[in-house]
Length: 338
Image 1 (cartoon, rainbow, N blue to C red):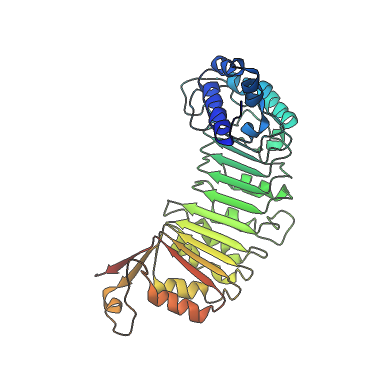
Image 2 (spheres, rainbow, N blue to C red):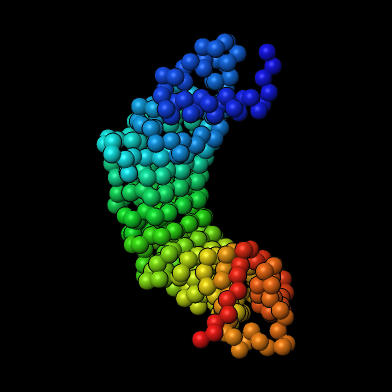
């Protein structure tokens, strides 16, 4: 019987759902026929496994997955832990992580959500093949980031225990080139400054940095005022973008700048980008441009519209940075009448 690729994907999805709900029911798929048994074991079905939407995944389910299904085909794994669950117990054990590394030598990306990692001494237990590690709403111990040579991209989103000490320990990661920090309440301006190269304990290999926060009091981007040699791509988002723009003038190697979910004025943007002569891409995503009522009535200014909320800014940037491409996505314009 011929089975199309669409049916293969559907079967793989059904099997993964069965395992998440009840690992015993998943075995029934292998008893349909010999062809279905081969199909369930096909590693192409287990290339990207996302169990983050399933709340019944336990350590027992993880062991069943690893022993019977996951293997050399796995590239991406997303898991949701028990940090917010009423069920107690260890979710990711040292033995399971070691087995994951040996059975899945091609795993490149691991995404953990609501996972308590405080029982693990170090991220050295994670598979050595990892290139991308994402931690969303997780908890980590003090020395967790002491080693991590192979990881190139680290995403930390709402990790309450992550502090300046953790940030400085990332200097030992020889392969880290991209770092995304979102809503980390214990990371300070001084902590970011301590990681600015040159120096022996700095993030000298970092080329991409993303800072995003919803707190007005946490203006970590001000730490960029010391400059950052080698930093080529920067993304700033949230309420701290305005003050952080004042620190961009010394980022002489910057090629790409993304500003998102913030309020800005045209003068603020022009003053900040004036010295960024090597900038090639400037993106505004969901930015609210604020201007005074008197300036909005000037006759020589091009009219704004929903499709182009900041035409005068676009024209000024084109003149100031002729080699830079500017994009506006879902941006709005507000006239200040005060």
